[in-house]
Image (cartoon, rainbow, N blue to C red; front, side, top):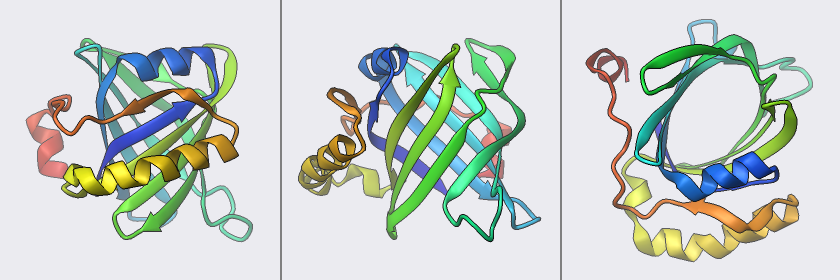
Length: 174
């Protein structure tokens, strides 16, 4: 499924900087054949340039957690065509709050600094309902405040920004 980032918050300085210059973000998440891990591709348009993350997430222990996913091995980060390994020791706490709503609290170590990002998604197509998103904005802010995120700096999708273009092979896989 394709998820469009509609709002996000951060609790570390570099994350807050990214919130200010992010234009759009779309994430594709696929359950792998083993039914225990997921492949993800996150395509961000940041200051007009593509920043792409790809990797695998797995459930660490299905007996003790039904919402936490860990980054398996090293993923990759691609920026301006340059691909490098990416391993922030990430953990994603994932909650589907309605049939077309997804909230992820991502914990990682970013450039040596621990931090979190609150990511609020709508399924592609549902991200264009401006009235619903406007009504939900105060709820999103309350969630961010409750989880101790900085609510003064955030990203909010404007409903018009283009997305980082996918390569033909990726479109066929989605």
